[in-house]
Structure formats: structure tokens, C-alpha cells
Amino acid sequence: MRAALVGVDFGHSDFAASMEELMLLSRSAGADPISTITAKRSSPDSAYFVGSGKADEIGDVVVNDGLEIVIFNHALSPAQQRNLEKRLNVRVLDRTSLILDIFAQRAKSHEGKLQVELAQLQHLATRLIRGWTHLERQKGGIGLRGPGETQLETDRRLIGDRVKALRARLEKLHKQRETQRRARGRNHTFSVSLVGYTNAGKSTLFNAVTKAGVYVADQLFATLDTTSRRVYLGQEVGNVVISDTVGFVRELPHQLVAAFRATLEETIHADLLLHVVDAASPVRMEQIEQVNLVLKEIGADHIPQILVWNKIDAAGLEPSVERDEYATISRVFVSAQKGSGLDLLRDAIVEMARKAPGSAHLYQHDAAPQEDQLDGQYDQHDCAAPDQDEEPGEDDRISTHSQVGTR
Image (cartoon, rainbow, N blue to C red):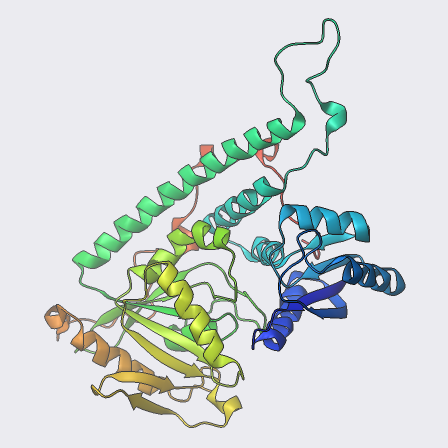
């Protein structure tokens, strides 16, 4: 699908990096970015976000290049999106809709699909328009007056009902996760979560440490589903649980943060966060800041954290460990793909586990190695299977997937 990318520079220093990220996002969704259009403004235009003149310029590019879709690097209001689609005569997506579309394509587990659908419905609810006026049942005339509802009201009611059903199912899965966490707590298992910017190499690092074999690709949001494995790290510590979580990105839609809260709770309840950073990225410090903002939003900013600088082979760095003024490990430099520095990372996890409150129980010299075993089968692909009678039929689904790329 041939696309035009539109970005407005409001004076932020990371504008160029943000536009490059938009191109990667659009390709991840299946679009083919043909043209890039930029503008400078002090504030968004209330009607078209970019102003009427720039909207006409975008329209000319759409016609001349034969484009099928226009993707904005910003969150558009429902009115701005409608106005642009009427003026450009093509489909218009904002950054939020684009990320939702990518999540819809990548979600594999039952829970992941429920979370994405909930986020899409919450986003769609603000963008319902009177597109079905020929089906309106509130008509005037003799014998035609009386109670009824417009198609718009029907859509809102159907969306509301579906949202309630999705939240109920996610709450059930949330209780399952709580049961599993309590079981791990009774077993005194040290919990580690990998967090970081999307495409920083979290899944590659997870595979290197746990031999899990989860899907890895050089693209944004290659994996969405949380996967956990139990790894034996020696007699001093015994078994620890390591979880691979969804990656973060600039301006992660609030609907997704809310919908994926159950998944992100693996991060909230962790004893240690391994914050994976792409050491070769020129905007790595901005990415670290964005991840920390999301961690603060979900209430995980108080958890001890180690910065894991990954891809050091591409950055020309050597495996090493850095400590802060309190002699606590602050950074570990590794290459997950090459396998260099992984021994340093394992030692860092062991050291943090030994320093954790209540870690005396970890000194189990008779603990038997159980490396690469599933921790109570709580990988989402296993524990999130729905009851047979709960699986929705085709007739009770509301199709909300945007049409970027091919499903």
C-alpha cells in the first residue's frame, strides 16, 4: 500500500529520529512509504492539524504519486482526521491508529488479541460518525414517531457491550496471573523482567540467556506476548524467572498501555528490571527516557534496574560492567547476537538477587538445576487459553482493524 508520511516539527530536538521511526512503523504495518512531507508550526491547526495550505500540498502529492494512504506522525483528533480524509479523498491514519494496526497484526496469544481488540474499540469509540443515516430509525411522520435509535447509537451500544465482555475476560486472565505470582512468591523465586525500547534486542537477549527460541526479527514490535522461562543460575541463587515483555515506543498510545496493563504487570511485580538499550542507536538516551516514562506510568519506576547496553559489536564497544558510586552494578555491556558479555550479565543478576531483600532463602545448595524449564506453564500461549464456551463467534465481533497492509 503506497503511503505518504507527514510530520510537523514543533521545535522538538528528536523530530528527525521520530520521522525515521515513523517510516519503520509504516513498513512494519505493511505500507510502502513513497513520499515524506514535513512542515514547521508553533501549534497544530484545529481543522487540518497542518493547515489548509499544507493539506492542499499533501493532496497534490497524493494525486501525483498515486498514493493510497496518508500517515501522520502525530495523534489526530476525530474532527481533524475526518476533515483530512474529505479533503484528500484517501484514508488518513495517525500514529496511534498505525501502532494499533501493527499490534493487531502481531498479537498471537488469546490474551494479546483481547488486549489489542479492547484498545482498538476504545480508540474507535471516539471516531464514530453518522455514516449510516439511511438506516436511521428516528423518522418523522404519521405512524412513524416513537422510540428508536440511530445507527450511531447502535454502534456505540455494541461497542460498549463488547468492551465490557473483553474487560471481563481480561480480568479473569489477570486473576490467573495473580495465582501464578503467588505460587512463585511461595517458592521464593527471584523475578527478572526485560524492558526496553522496541527493536533494542530484548527477545534476542532473552533467547541467548534462556534458550527459549521466541520469535526474533529486525522490526518494530516483532513480539507482543510476554514469555517467561525459569533459569538455573548456580547454587547460590538457584532458579530465577526471566520474562520478555512488549517493547516501548515514543508516544505509546494510552489505550495500549491500559489494555496491556495485565501483561505489563509482569514488569510491575518483578524484583529486577533489565533495561535493554540499543548501544548503536544515536538516540539511545532519548529512548531510555521514553522507557522510563512508561515505567513510571505503570508504577514500575521504583524497581531496581540495570541498563543492559546491547549490540556493542555494532557500536564498537567491549563487554564490561560499570558500577555507581555505591558499588552497585548500573550498566552491563553485551552483544546478545554474538554472545559476548552474557557471563557478565548472569553474574550481575546473581549479585542483585543476593542483595535483594529476603534473599537468605536463595542459598539452596541442594537445589537441582532446572534450566530452560517453563515456570508453571505461565507463558501467555499456554495459560491464556479461553474456556470453550467463551470464545466469541464471528457475529459478535466488531471489525476495527485498519486496512494498512495485508492480514
